[in-house]
Every structure is written in C-alpha cells, then in structure tokens.
Amino acid sequence: MRSYTFSHAITRKPSTSIIAGLRAVDTGTPDLALMLTHHADYIAALRATGAEVVELEAMQAYPDSVFVEDTALCLPEGAVVMRPGAASRLGEAAEMAPHLAALYVDVRRIEGDDSFIEGGDILTTETEILVGRSARTNAAGVAELARLVADWGYKLREVFTPPGVLHFKTDCSLLDGETILSTKRLADSGCFEGYKVIHVVDGEEACANSIRFNDLVIMPAGFPKTRAVLQQAGYKVQEIGNTECAKIDGGMSCLSLRFTPTR
Image (cartoon, rainbow, N blue to C red; front, side, top):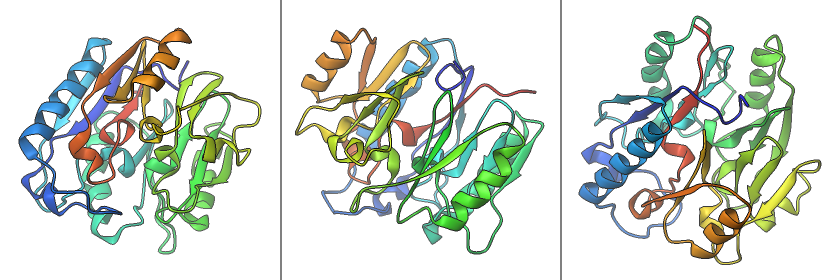
C-alpha cells in the first residue's frame, strides 16, 4: 500500500525562533523544551516501524520549518517541491529540495509565480491525490501539480477545505487503503464519497490530523474517545504529545515527509 507503507521519513528539528511561528489564533507561546521532547517521541515512533528517518538541523531563519510536510509531495516515482502560500515560508521549500535530490532521481517543482500549494492540503490515497483549496493552496497551484504528476499515472481531484480551517488535512487523515478519519464538517461536504469514513468524536476535532505510518496510526495525545474508536476498529494506535505544535497550528502529518523513494 503505497499510500501508507513507507521506508523513509524526513523531519526537521524545531528552532528557537519557533515562538514567532504563524498561527491563526494566539493560544500561548510554545515551550521549546517540551516541543523537543514531543519531537523526539515522534521520531522514535516512526523508527519503531523500521523506517529510516532523516533528521535535518533546525533553521533559525524559518520559524515554521519544523513543519516539513508543507514543502513537498513525496511519491514513489518522484518528489514535487511545493510553493507555500505563506510568503515567510517560500524559502523552506528551496532548502528541502537538495535533501530530496539525494533520495530521488526525479525531483520536480511548482514554479508558477501565481501558483501556491502546501503539502498540508494534499491527501494521497491508493486511487487518487486529493488536494484541498485553502488560504495556502490556490487553483493555479492545484492545476500545476496535476500536470506534474500526470505522467506518473496519478489522478488528482480538487476539493475544498472548510472555511476557517488552515489545511485540508487539518480535518482528515488516511487510515488505510479505503478508510479516512475525518471531522464531520469535512465529510459532510461529500469529498470522501466512495471511501469508508470514521468520524472523530465531537469535541475531539483536533485529532483528525493523525497519520498512518506502516503498522501505526500516530495521533496526538489527549483524545481518548477517538482513540478508543480507532482501537475498536482494529488499528494499532500510538499517541504523541502535540500541545506545543498545536499552538502554531501544527499536527502529526505536518512534522514529516513520508515516502518510499525510487532510486
């Protein structure tokens, strides 16, 4: 299952500048020491599945650079370097490109001046790539990505992120080849027709951003009702603390690029 079975992941250590990270609502300043502890736990969980994890050094110039997922889309056939919709993050994608080139033969780029797209708006399943339009991803970015992945055999479908939600994957995650974890507000849009949908429990919407990584579903700690639903459905769940990343709109998927490169 290429959509959730991976040999590699890339992460980046949080920098001390993370206190200046972007956020929709100010809920407090992240505690860097606690964030580093959570980050180490996250990397350990990825490695526990047998994956090779590349840990990149912190980048002081980019407060949000711990959220590496927004910089690229990684597929077995190749990688596509994104063009983030937040101006302060444009340089992050350029910094990621050489690391991808070390692992992939084919690395492509979103290059249009009017194109903006972030990895947090992209959900890859076994049958298609869903891309959510949002404040960070526009129609030009979606169209350019569709052209770039077409010869790799991928069907791309444009959907829409709920108003007031930062990224498409803020509200959803892939659980397996046919199952999506989603908030009700996103699922009610009809974007997951043809998939089995497991809803996060009311009041626990913030755990919709989890990841399926090999045999684990890695979810943020503190959402016991949804955890129980996933365990009852037969998933092996591991919780990771996310209180500090959540203060700057980050979740489980944001913290890594996950892939099996064709060398």
